[in-house]
Structure formats: structure tokens, C-alpha cells
Length: 256
Image: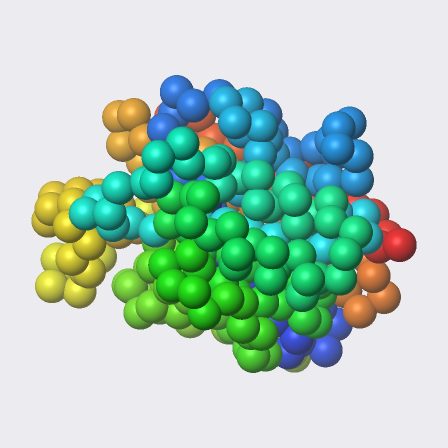
């Protein structure tokens, strides 16, 4: 997952609005979103190499999304665990949200660098294992996360936040298609606006759009989640193969 845009506890109808893109190598096997048989109660896609996921929701109302940190100068720890397992652990956790996240802080050194957004509609937290600060509660409003810290002003993050803010205006009904249109923006941003994350100017340019399309790597799926204040969750995922639309999954359920 390389871009998570979300509006948190601000909209009069939806305390959680998410629009996210997962970017990955095309050759890495994955299963499209659906209800998991094991562990049960998770609605998410699944990484078939390591068994975890990058974004998902649970029947109990938990939500989590993970991105990696783009920093080629920092190698992963020896025998690093799969970061996708953190999302699975949170979604299936029976302990209070804060206790689960505190346990992640203590285990941070076992994983390559990550960012994690986790919580429930109306109460979200953000944390990263780049430091030992743990998880902090996210303020209400529109936020964006790519492969740096929450709300780092990369062009794709700033553009996405502005577009999402307009799309979820309280006076307008939310059309999921309008959120997918934001995620489909494939135009690179100007070179002078791009960050320097150590991958070189050409790669920064390739990775700059919200929707990435290259010969072997790019956006594999786009996900929209709407959770209303009555506990009804709408989950829509559009899959892509080599940058081309390959299918859609729609699910609705009531949090219990």
C-alpha cells in the first residue's frame, strides 16, 4: 500500500472515509478482497507470499492500513517479520485498540520500516517504527499517508488531500466513483516538487503519481471504504493487472 487518503471524524454521515491505492510488483501473488475464512471476520485482500494484508476492516469495526517507508539507505533487520501481519493482528485482536498498538511499539525492531493507521470509525491512531514514540491519536479532518510520515507534503499526498476534501464536502452526497477518480490520477508531478528519498530522480518521477503504471510495478488495486455513523460499512475494491482494470468487489456489512 503506497497511498492512503482518509477523512476522519468530520463528515456528518461518515466518520471514516478512505480512498487508498496499493502499489506492488505485478509478479507478487495476491488474492482480491473478500471475507477471510481463516482468521475469520476480516474483509481484505491477501498477500499470498506472506499471508498478511495491506489494508482491511473487521466485522467488529476495526480498520487498519499499512505503508512501507521509502528509505533505501536503511536495511531491514535480519529475519524481519512480514509487515502485513501487523494489519491482520490488529483486525483480529481482542484486546482494546490501545493495548494492541502498544504491543506493536514494543515489537517494532522485528520489522522493516512501516507506517500504520489503525483504529475504529471515529477514533484512529498513527504510528511508525522509525522511532520509539509509539502511536498517537489522529485529529479529525482529511489526512494522507504515502511512504513517509503521516501528512508529509509529497505532491501526491497534497493533491489527494485537496481532492478528497472537495469530494466529501458535507453538503454533497459521497459518490464512490469520485473517490476512485482521485485514485486514478496517473500524471507525474513536476520534478522540482518531488521529494529526494534516495532512489534517484527518474524513479522519483515514476513513483510520483497517485496511480502508478510501469512495466513490472504499479498500482494493483484501489479501495474505497465508507463507514457511516449507524455502523454500516461499504467496501469497494477495484483490481488492476498491468495497469488495466481487472475487476471489482463490493461488500456491505453492519458492524457488530
